[in-house]
Length: 284
Ligand code: AMP
Image: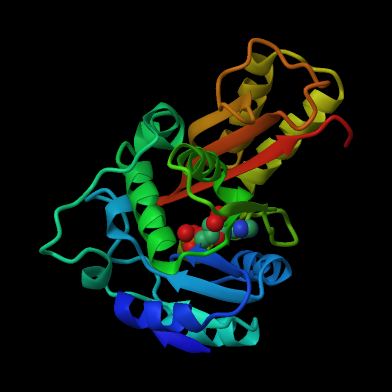
């Protein structure tokens, strides 16, 4: 497995890559959710490249950029074990050379709601770094987790509008046995907080159940989701039902819109902000 830390070396390795190249962009601190993306990348590509980069432009000044976990050696081992062909782990200066004038990449219509309401600059940072990674790595396909549902929706829109010739592969959310969605930020959860964090997935399961048993009023479901989270001591940021493609609000829920409804939640457990979602299908 090669490791490139600057763009010139990445391009040398990339030039020798064979067949279809599948990219898995990550911020490191790899867990089984990331590994599932790597597995999918092996299925859809001949060469799998993982990027490891804690992207400063997607963090607001008060967020956890400095303390975000960076277990580089453990990440390298996980990539080796998962049969990754190449690792791109650039420095901040390699990604954002200080002498280069920066560029805005954004999908404002989708980036201001939900996560964007409390993190207004977040998705512009994500779009910019992913666009840069696409131009540096030149993959044929890229794998993203449904765990970050809004991010996936925004990146699909970016790829479509900017005509990147790249297949975007959506991969299901990997969970712990008790339902907690795997996340690099779960390592921050201490003591009872680990139990409290279950409030997110339990609220989503409740929403799925309510839709399947015929509840058609999103406001009622949203209220219940909120209550479930609060009962688990989660400070609710949002608990909503949205159209799965547009992320717009729904007046009422028609289950025949199979797969077109998504329940999304965000909240803080102590100081740890967590997100989760479930797409609601017609049949349980
Ligand atoms: P991150 O390192 O948090 O930026 O995530 C890198 C990629 O892994 C993103 O596409 C995430 O959506 C995806 N990912 C993170 N957690 C999970 C999970 N529990 N299941 C599936 N994919 C995930």
